[in-house]
Length: 104
Image 1: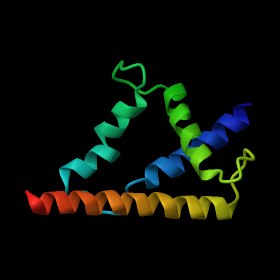
Image 2 (image 1 turned 90 degrees about the horizontal axis):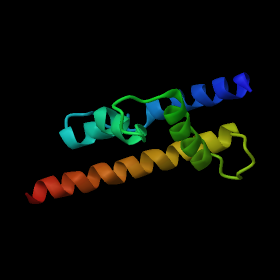
Image 3 (image 1 turned 90 degrees about the vertical axis):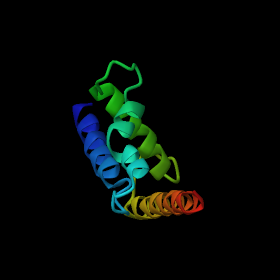
């Protein structure tokens, strides 16, 4: 059981650390996805801290999104394709924000 938690934690660190890293963070609204805004989303009991359980809950959600065949395991291909999808969504959000910024 401890091994599974450790592996899940490591995968979560990998996934969460890479999320949003596609673009530089010169836009303040983008930084919310990586900094305090992300922590606030992870802090489900709103106590101002992220517990291991809260962190692993978020990691489990991410894992589920990457596990395309829902077999409880990530293959290198699933991980690669999942990261591509995450980057594409991140690009879309960035472009949308840039468009909104230009219309202001």
